[in-house]
Image 1 (cartoon, rainbow, N blue to C red):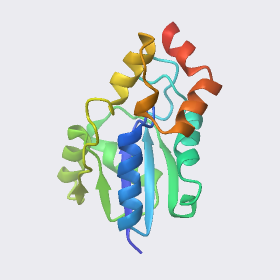
Image 2 (cartoon, helix red, strand yellow):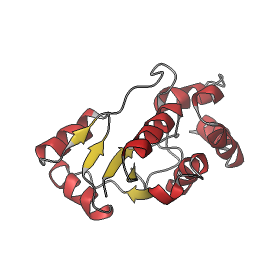
Image 3 (spheres, rainbow, N blue to C red):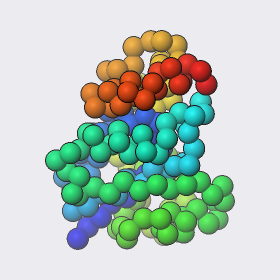
Image 4 (cartoon, helix red, strand yellow):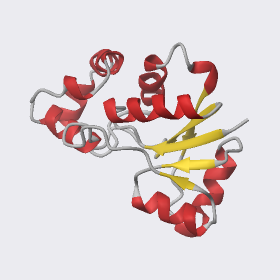
Amino acid sequence: MTTALFIGRFQPFHNGHYKSVKRLISEYDCVIIGVGSSEKSYTTDNPFTFSERKRMISSCFSEEMKRLRIIAIPDINNDEKWVSHVISCVPQFSIVYSNNSWVRKLFRRAKIKVGRTEWHDRKNCMAKRIREKIAQTKSWEKSVPMPVIKIIKKVNGEERIHLL
């Protein structure tokens, strides 16, 4: 069985993430979604809790959930130990996917195979930009899947981001 690990913070889970996960599901038997900075929430960079991010992701993949695992990866703030920390948090995998240069560098240094996902509508599908649009009361909804919009509204995510 081939398993891929896809790492991100997913603050929030957007259309680019969605398309990347769909592609990985089509290529691998199992996809582990590693939710980084899982212990962080209610901050400008990390407004959503791990539980909320997990719901955002799982709500988009009800049909595929038997092939997905969503795992919390808390920060340890130690580059030398981070890859072994991630490995201790998740089931075994054969390749890691991330477009984050820091993540890619650390896994390569550990001699672990690294893949890259395609950028999808990079201008609109960037979590930081989406959070900025929410904070500025600009239209952001087209950048995330419909189930994610519903969750953000249900948890008062817009108001939370405005207050941060």
